[in-house]
Length: 472
Ligand code: PA5
Image 1: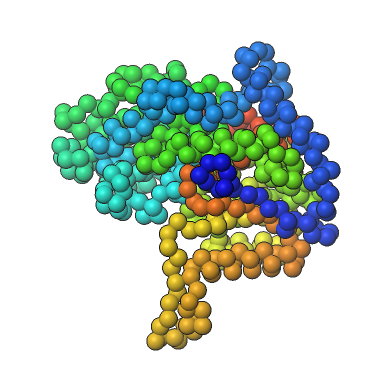
Image 2 (image 1 turned 90 degrees about the horizontal axis):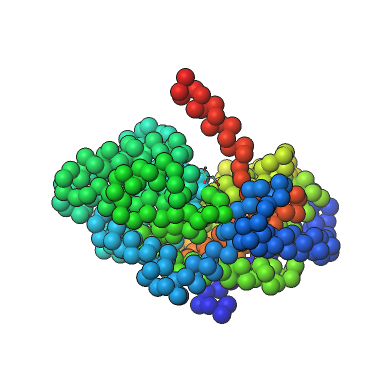
């Protein structure tokens, strides 16, 4: 246990030390001075950002504000209670939840993936199908505005406002999230869903009460939200980039609407900051993860980073990291390629390639040590044609453990390196640590290889051509 009431997540890279194809003992220690320098630079960047002084060209943009965000939000909450950012988010979520039975979250990229990761990992696997009581009076939740998929959008519209808005069970609302306030996918979806919301509310309620925007302190979405008369708006603080914004209102507001413990999320992230600042290489999950991943890339050509998640609830958390790594380090022909798999599902699809394909991968298992729910046993049956009575007393977690161990053994037999990231449980404490660990690791790795992890100039290319095609 840490000093808090949750357990730390741990990184165990023992499976990478394999003769010929993996690392050698001492490799990480030899890299330690460079890792420590990258940590020092990452922390110095926070001071530079806070000073509002001139930023050297190679560090521009410098979005180091995410790093101390958990501590700042927690201190604000301790001091200002209900008037703090977290206090306001909790109050908005309570108000919103009292009035609606469905919430549509509009956003894309960093304005979507963190909230989706929290929903998939921390909520009931069939949240939207549960009764309102079983959902603890939280709304059903849907994610849109992250694509321009006509049929998916129509499909969701089919579900919304199917009865009179005087009945709460038929009322719905929108959380619209866009830092720039101008991203086309989100803006187009907002217009479509807002029109539908206006129609479904009729003159029973004020439209603005059913829309909560999260955006920058100016811009198109800001202006539109003012025009609609939204009584509550949240701002993404300066110096926090989109994919580093999960612990701002971008992730915290949807999480609070889902009834998740956002103070625990922040406390856990702050605890990861503490470990990052204090612990030496060899005990520091952030520096060790960066060191091992980097060494495997430069020494063994492992340019593909497989995040091998061992829980269905972690798929979106893996995709969140895919975006973080791709947009941060995929620059100037650098940056490993991230891939998320979910096992045991993908052992039956990608497994063959990981076992016998090119030796260009580092597999990092993300393992949840304890399920949240009671273990389901296979059970005994008079119909033993399936020959399962032999293992009838085993549970699904027993099978999963055997699969994890077995898969690592099979990889090791063929000298395929693996590392393990252990999450004690799938909950806010684990996700808070995980988010902060991966954001820190991405920045430290950027500093290590001389790539500015902030900004995503390459994303502009498609936007330019799409707009040209659309408006000509
Ligand atoms: O990391 C980023 O900055 C991007 O992925 C953005 O989050 C994404 O493009 C969405 O941008 P916005 O929040 O401005 O709509």
